[in-house]
Length: 567
Image (tube, rainbow, N blue to C red; front, side):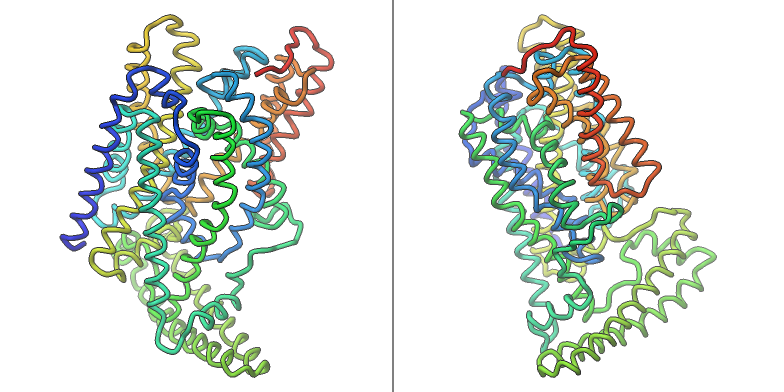
């Protein structure tokens, strides 16, 4: 990178850490540290939630996925507005009026301590792992930029975020998120403009979108009902509804946000802000990925976007095979580029027969390029010994580092840092809160002053930061990062949501019913995940149904100790 780019990144990191630490003075009591004294305005909470969602995973993993598969991923978010409305009605009043620190405290009031502790433990496991994936996304970028090894890069990203979260608490998390959100959106818009301007002369925006449409990359609705397909209209409106209900309604990283609101009304408004803006923002991210594909239609891409693996294969016994594949790729790329240009010209002519012929030719040439890239991937996997190798997460970083002008490179790298830090800080804060409130204060030290709990909370934040860095080291090479984090979540979310639905919606549910139902839900999801090809979004539905059915049946035969639902 140019010196100016380094200066921009360094200045941003220095400012954001200082800005977070300076809020320490507002977090000298436990309620101020964990819940910002329940004083944040709705718009700050809403922007903070959205900043968490627009993570570095979104900027790197989702753009890479759209480069490969197009806009289909957008279907996952069609249920979000409905989920936000239901959460506003079902969960927000219960949690906000209960004056609790964690969502899982409510489960002890409604059921018992073991149900609360088990549910909180599941949250800690799922959120701790997903936090590691969030760190790994920018680590991919910086390992390329700096030439550092992955462990060092993960620590360089995760630990500064842990520092300002340790000292500033949720107050620091929320207000730094507001500022980071501005930088993230600006960075995405800047990249999109650069990609549009990077199209060759004679290829207009309409022409480019028409070419992308031929490949199916603009498809945002797939009405086929196939439980093995990841992204369809039905998985996005049914299965994803359960995912969003659990994530935004019962996950401490999100519940903790609207517990900081001044009132139930402001908490609801902050959620509806995400309902209105999440889909347009996600569409922007996916369009960046589609235009990356279009850019590399007319600008030669590398055969493998991951330079580390490319270097490994060139030094291996398969080097000659890789070079031969490169030669085939260059020829196939030129043919595809010509076919794409011919398709754009045919579309402008308005001759439907000519368009159909050009589209068929382009589709054939594109399939040839895809096939050669698969050959290259197989060679890299064999040469490197990395059977899970996928370079989808390197497409966006490669474009940023090789095709953006000086200054903008530093800005985008800073935006990626901003996206990562906003998500990491929120997750570390929630992990620390659940650890201290649901376990340490509940079992280890039930009576102590705020100063003691604050010290323990800061230690817990640092410990979770180190844990997340360790997970990150192993997460960068396991496919599309956005899918990895959703797979982690979907393994747990359905069962956790099922327990809360029992608590809020079924007055006859008992503590034993909830606990046994939770175990049954996790067991059922584990069986489905490891023994079937059912897409991971449907795991959320499986978990909810299993908990409700088993929990309801156990409650009917074991009514002892029943408690009425209450806030």
